[in-house]
Image 1: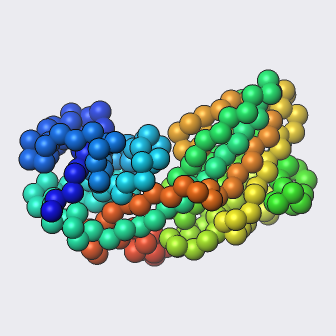
Image 2: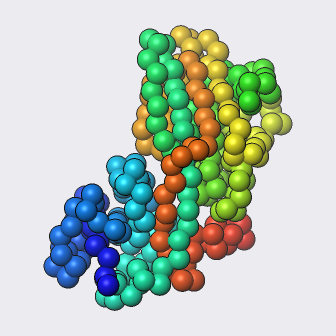
Length: 254
């Protein structure tokens, strides 16, 4: 039997038109009543879908109708039922971010790609790094630093010259952004079960913001990051288009 499918779409006219086509074929179904989510858009909309509906525990099948579609399949509306039946799962485990602001507010958020700390002004950020409570870097002077999952390692992390991490490996990338001191530090690959704590030094003079995917928290003084122990999401991909293979292929791109 065909599973109950909720069709979600990004704001672009192309995505909205595609949703109308699929809803006319599959019927309208709310996410809370569905067995599978179909997301139409780009990677940004896929991340929005995971943040908004990830708690339902439903598999998500994306089709590219946006600028970037690394997390998506190609858009072909025909035979969608057969494509879903033969799709291959990729299980992702997000990062949990806990940020403390200058005012003492604590903000929790999830990140499926990365958690990034970025300077807010022209002044470089001064950061101190702890791993599992042990000080590993006394002072990092930089534009920022990020912690990326394997799924997110080909995104902002790769642009910052961080390593590509094969999907399924139980590691995360800790990558500096435009590090000024120490000049030769290029980051680290860490076990995914560690907790990374980032302390902002001189936060008043050198303010820093933290982002978990697209959720920004400004004027942070301390951020802790660890892999979620409870939350997972499952993305579905067409055979031959699996996420793990495309992440592997990225390492051989010129």
